[in-house]
Image 1 (cartoon, one colour):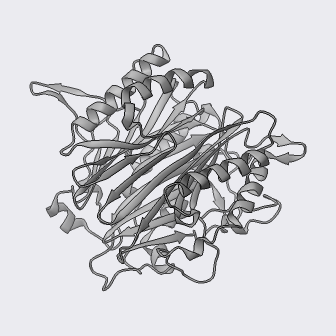
Image 2 (image 1 turned 90 degrees about the vertical axis):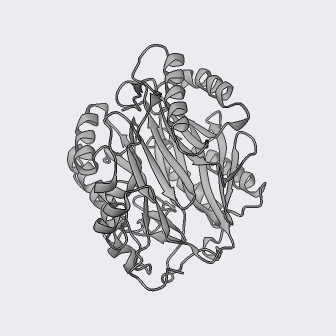
Image 3 (image 1 turned 45 degrees about the horizontal axis):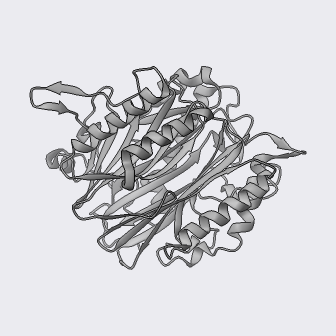
Length: 449
């Protein structure tokens, strides 16, 4: 998939894939709106081959961009093609835009250095937080990019070096941070995990952010299902994460909505890469606004990951199934890496098609208005149509077309990257993550606290 450009007499033109929230036609919106999901399918604008979503929330515009070069050739050519498409998308918006975070999916580890040099030359002092992940795009391209951008008319973006970026607007502060790449060398998966989380915590701390404020994490681990001695590397990552999280009281966040006495953790993706090492990054939010809140979501059809029995991991994975952030009437739901699991067991271990269907069912149930109400936020929620973008991690390249067909049938032309990556269980063939944008229903009196 890629973002294709079309020429007109007025010059380079590009239409967005989808427009959500304030950007939609108000007549369609009033006719289609339903509680907890206010970006109706009829209001989205699709263009074949163009893969970005425009999200209007008040006076701020956000872009979710997915680009996979189609021109072929050397990796340098593909990198410049990707940058050209991103540049065209940004320049086509109604407000000036700046990139905040991007993940570059690379087919070969040896190509990372060349791509990095080109990206640094292009972005210069406005280099977004950038992760280079060795996960080959499933369509055969040498690289692909997922990028996030924000309008700057009313937003201040701070560039604090290669591993830290801040965004401030209307009393809100978003913080994007990474720990850099932790390579294997002579260190075990547990030692890598310990070092990475320590570095990430110190990076957030440099701008006054305690780790309790982190809402979303991404963990990319080389050889995720391989064994060190007789212990799977992912289990050792979980051991390091658990020990770090034991020192963090996520429940003390002033923004957190508590529903019962269950454990609280950030949403997260833990996925394999083709390079032995560990790359981690996170997103935090801070504010004193009273109309902002955070909810950790669990799926009623799945056992919480942090409650998994020891047969899956001696130290269970510490993450929530999703994190929802309410800002006024706007709702952003970060969906963790999700797979074909019911309760704690893998379902359909021999069918990529059925696993993809079940994974999307799990996401649909997780973000549904009924689940938000069950967990204490009536009037909130989203639908699959509200996903601004997805990533689909496919274990076996031969399953790519099958997985893509299911996703396109269920989701339409949502901006997506399909990457070849190992999933954290040997019998899991597919994993999907995404982010949905919707609104709190105006029909519900009051708002979630």
